[in-house]
Image 1 (spheres, one colour):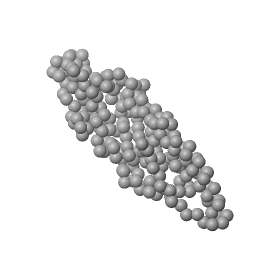
Image 2: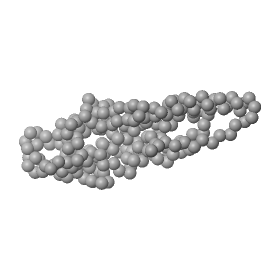
Image 3: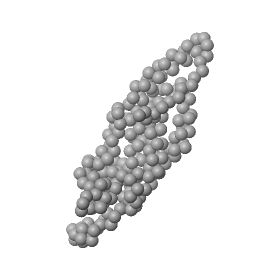
Length: 196
């Protein structure tokens, strides 16, 4: 499945100017091929804040996703043990390690923020995160990742911004009309970041 598709329309003048324009376009497309094959490294930096913003909303609202909604309250017995140990914070925040790994702009040692030629990763190294996401036979699920339309719109804008950055890096934007891409970024709320 293709992630991106481009439509190319061009008009070339005849004579030396036209040949020079075609040569410039050929070189730009070669650079664009290299840059776009590594587009994830351009998309990741725009996408990470969208994920972090959603995670902050999820923790602040104690579950705001469209599929599971509010997180289940803690069981009374666990709540008593937790308070006796001095932990009085909200659901899913005992030490703050999990929340910090998913929400901070300056990643913690538990945060996963990686880009490569083939994709980007955002997540946490906190080992108990999957128990909260999926639940267990003893514990209700409290999904950290229950993405809503606002998140999806922010992520689409981030991807478009990353593609725009890759096109700029390849200099293809100097020989191609990218106004349609710029309009899509604006239409997707490109400066909102899927935000809070």
